[in-house]
Image (cartoon, rainbow, N blue to C red; front, side, top):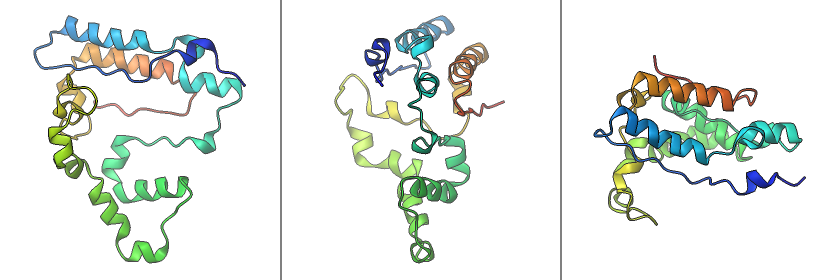
Length: 170
């Protein structure tokens, strides 16, 4: 089945750089600029694919940052199983799951030299733009309550019916 033309042309690599100096209106404008690049209505992501008959839940795994922070080992095992490479009892007994979990931890990845000194292909983006502090709900320190409410409504509306449910900080 052919994807709609609007879906083919949408950008999937938008990045918003918000900083503490942004006032509410400036930050909202940055968010609006990102939102305008997203596919609209009938061509929006997973919901559209589901209705086109090409959405296959067995080929999509939703993983939430909050769950990965709280249940590192079980989430890693779930990912390995989904990819078709579940851990063996021997690998689990040897502590391989815990070792991989440690290597993939936010703290370890943030402290890798490459992630502290390299901006990748975009020199305008500082290396530290990709890592904040790795705490669940930290967005509440960057967004005003009205901005957080705006993004929550947007996400809830756009992903309604997809099976993807976001967890929000109180």
